Image (cartoon, rainbow, N blue to C red):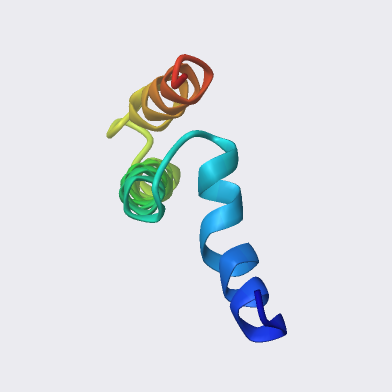
Length: 73
């Protein structure tokens, strides 16, 4: 491999391969996690202003994310 293609492999394929995924499988999983994290953050922000709203939403989402990450492979 040339230096340039070796860098591209390291940048885009080495880590996904290390968790037995393709680049696109890994990207889809990571985007899904980021959407859930944004949702948890939004719920926590609303809860900070209006304590009666989303009382358990952020913590529930975080528990779901943790469970999914732990049981992934």
